Length: 114
Length: 113
Image (cartoon, rainbow over all chains, first blue to last red; front, top):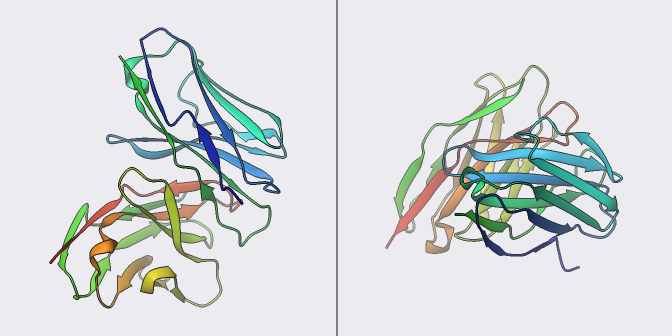
C-alpha cells in the first residue's frame, strides 16, 4: 500500500488567498483525521471523519477553515482567506474502525502564508 | 477530559546508554495510550500502544513502555540508544471513543556519539 498521500508537500501563498490541501487515505480505512502542527501549539486535531461523515470538528480554529470528504478515497482541507498565522504543517491520518488499530500519518503539507 | 504531559522538552543521551522519556496522563476513564516518533521533516510513526492488555508494552526498534495506573504514567524506555533514535517523541492519549488523539508537546531526543 502507498500509505496516506498528501498534496502538495509544500505550499507558499499570499495572505488572503484560498488554499486547498488534499489527502488520500489508505484504502479500506474508515476514519480520516486532519491535524495541524505548529511550534507554539504542537499537534492539534482539527476534524475527523467516519465513512465520509464529519464526526468532530471542534478543533477547527474558525470559519475560514473547512473540510470535506466527498468519497472514501479523498478529502480536502480548505482555508479561505488564508492568514500568516495559518502557517503550519498539516497532517492527514487514517485508520480502520475498531479499538486496536493505529492511525497512519501522511508526510504532511508545509504551508507558508506570507 | 483527557490529557498528557511530557515532563521533558529535551533529553540528551550518549549512544549506547539507556533512554527514558517521561509521560504522565490524566483521564477520567481507562485510556488508550501511544508513543509516536517523528524524524525531521517526516510524518509520524507509531512506536507502541497500550490498550488495556499487558501493562508492559513492547514496540518497534527496541522501545518499550510501562503503563502504571497508580502513578498515571506511561514512560518510554530503551536499553541502549542508537544515533538513529534522534527524533521528536510524542506521548498520546485517545479520547473516550478511542479515535480522537490528544498529543503531548513532544520530547526532542538528542543522541551524541
